[in-house]
Image 1 (cartoon, chains in turn purple, blue):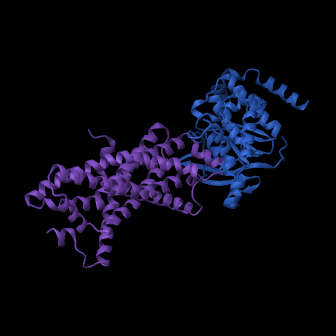
Image 2 (image 1 turned 90 degrees about the vertical axis):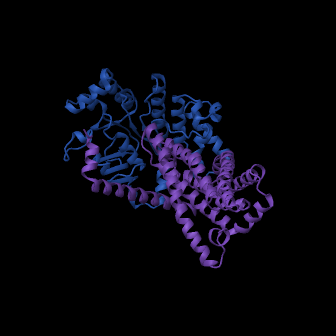
Image 3 (image 1 turned 120 degrees about the vertical axis):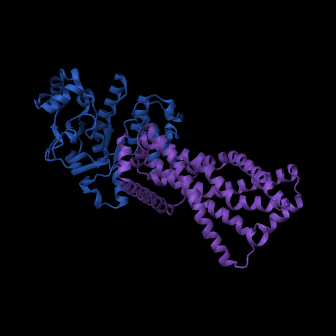
Length: 284
Length: 277
C-alpha cells in the first residue's frame, strides 16, 4: 500500500514538479535578497579588527592542514591515473603539463572550495543557527547593532579574501606532490616534466582558477550565513542548516565551475584567438 | 496608573501570521509610561511574539507599531536606531554572546553606540554588574562558566547599560530556583522604582506578577477564537483578574497558577494600600 505522500506524488507529478520549481525559485530569490543585503552593508566600512581576526584565523589558518593533506593526495592520484594512460602512448614526459593544468584550472579551486564549504561553511551555518535558536541574533538587534553587518560581513570578506590563498596552496602542494610521485616513483624525467608544464600552463590558467575561487568563496559565505540566519528551531534545525549549507554550496560550486569555465575560456579565445590549446594544438 | 498617561508603546490592529497560522489577529494594546505590565496567557497564545513585535524584532504581517507616540514606519533608519536604544530586552535564556566574556557582553551595546572611552565603558560595566548584584570578579568569565541565574542578571546588566526607558522581560524567572526568581523579581522592581523604567513582562509565574505588575494583560490563543473575538481577553489589575468569573480566565488561572492564587487578592490589596500610603 502506498503512503499518502507517495500516492499524491504519483497522482500529481505535474503539481509536484510545480511545487519543487516554486521552492527552487523562492530559495534562489531569498538567497539573492540576502546576498544583496550583505553587499549593501559593505560600503559601511571594514569590520573591526577584534571581530575579523578570529574569523580569519578560523577560516584561513585552520584550513591549511586539511588543504595540504587533500592537495597532496590529489596531486599523487592525478600522477598515478594519468601516468597509466600516457604511458600507453609513450607520452609520460608530458605528465607535468596535464597535472599542472588540471590542478590550477579545475581541481585546485574546486578542492579548496569544497574543503571550505565542508569545514568552514557548515561550521558557520551551525554557529549562526545556534545564535538564531538561542536568540543571540535578536539580542544583537536589540542592542542597536545590525546582525548582518556584525556577523555576516566579516565572514563574507574573510571567505572572499582567503579562498584564493587556500586555492594557491592547494595548487602548489598538488603540483609538488604530482612532481614528486611522477619523477621519484614513476621515473618521469624531471626536466621534461617542468618544461611541458611551463609550455602549456599560462598565467591566464592560474588566474582563471583564482578568479573562480573568489566566486566560490562568495557563494559559500552567502549560502552558509543565510542557512544559519534562517535555520529552523532546536538542534534539528541547526543540524539541517549545516547539512543544507554544505549540499547547496557543493552544488553551487559545481554549477558555477561549469559556467565560469565556459565564460573564462570564451573570453580567453576572444582575447587571444591564436592561442595554443593543450588539447588541440599541443599534445594531440 | 492614569489612563490619560501617554502610551510609550502602542500596538494597533497587529496581525502576525506564520506559515498560514494566525498567531496574533487584530491586537490593540498600549503600554503607558512608568507602569509595569505583565502579559500572561497559556503557552502558544502569542505573548512572546507580542513582545518581540513591540521591540520590532519581528515584523507583523499588518498593523501599526508606535514608539513614544511615533509610528515606527514613519521613522528613518537612524531614528529607529535611536528610539530602539531607549528599549531594553531581557531574553528568556539571557541570550548572552557565547564567544564574548561577561565584560564584553555588557559593554557590547555601549560600543555599538559609538562609545570609545574604554575607562568610561569599564566603569559603566562595573556599575551595572553591581546594580544587578553581581561581583565584578566574573567579568572575565564566559557565559558558559556562570550559572543560569547569573546569566539572567548579566543579561539584565547588558540591557540596563544603555539606560533604557522601557524594559522588556521575556519569562525572566523561567528555569530559576525560588531564590533566584525572587532576586530577579526584586531587580525588576528596583529597576522600575529607582530608574522609573516602564516594564513589560511575559511570564507564567503568578508570584512575579504579584510582586512587580501594576497591570495584567491576558491573551487567548487565536485558534480558539472566531475572527471577530478579541484576543486580549483581560486588561486590568491582579485583584480584578482573581475576582473575574469568566470561564477562559478561570481555566487559565486554574491550569497555570494552581494553588498560587490563594491569598493573592488580600496580598495585592495590601500592596496597593502600601503604595497609596
